[in-house]
Image (cartoon, rainbow over all chains, first blue to last red):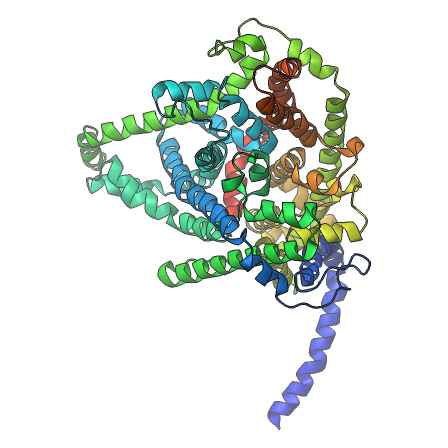
Length: 317
Length: 304
């Protein structure tokens, strides 16, 4: 009896308060409307369009007009001769980008943080951030200029030092594609990615260093016992976020670096979707390949997030 | 006094050996990082002022040789570059203006703790960072809303970036004291007025940072134009650059050293200048905003 009456009393009160909050907050709703509309149309709209992956696309009837075909296009992809190469190329590039690209910003940040001279520190920071603002088109053009087998300054220098074989074409040889992709990626973004760690290091309490010194810790030990623990949460969060991209490779750069000579190692999922799905108008097949990719990435992200929540009690959201 | 001395002693002792090696390693790392990052950019700059034949012979290494502005003169005569430039300026200007007009109010709303729907809206926004329709459904949508081969797509598409939205929201939450809002509402201040007259003027740092992010995003945008624009008249600078720098290069690769000499020579003359001319505007904005970076990025990082 008592429960029922309180429930009945609560219900209208809640309705009134909802209306009241709307009357009070209408300006907030107005302010968020453009962003909400954008996300709804341009982000959730394509998710609705994902049904394309399960239908036969029909040019006259649009996205929702084709017949349901279930997993036909997924199976077609799994059985196609391109399934293994696209997965392998994507994974290899993403994996090496992560393994090689992840520690360098951390080392760079610790080094920059330890620089005593303010002017040198500023100079290094400014310069290493800069390449991040270079467009992908320009970056790839720079690679072609610097690594040209005949006139490239860098390829000639590497050949003189002996790091690169006499006949190697860094722009064409399939074996050179991944190293060039990964190293140029590090060149472009290691500095930028270090900012977040530099900021975390700047926030370390000076007393911790003093305490470590009193305990007789040298500068290396301070890095190990003071600085690394301080930036560990940041490292883990970024690792989780990067795990979500283990099967995604930037379309632009791969597309721009692709040529007839390296196609055997440079056809990643995103370029495959573009070439097969858009260029050849196999819309349903392309959607299925894209969806497969997104789901795999999403699963990896969730898994990494769960593991880190268990192990380190750190997670996204 | 004695306490200070006690602190000093171990510090002094450990200056030798390990600490010295640490200093050397730090010096080496920063020096080589500087060199490796700076040299390629420096090379493009000096090559753009040099005779391209000398550049190709590998004689231009440390400073310009056979100083010539031929490349730049050629660039200024090319109509496609000018058109691309103009298009990119328009897309970047209006695109960034729209970005700010949409992102800032939304971030303000999501920073208001009293706003009941804020958690659910935030979740729906963040979800789109990790899950999306993918290339083809997005292409279909752009086609269906009539933005295919329409220059507006360059301005509208990407109007909100959820990452930038989170950075801004977190800034509003952490840097603007709640007391200000309480005081303002006591005086009968509406959300519109509070946002316009108090929040925005106090948020120059974060506005500068996300403005730069958006601006650079528009300036360097190649993907949107590649997918959604066909007409030459609408192409932004990045597409013009691609056609000029990369397609040319591929052609040169097939014709070899012997043939196609004229096209190759012409391309060599202008490619360095084109890179400079297209990249310098973005790099010019950057120093003005650099001081806000660490702060802005840090704030966004707190919430991931």
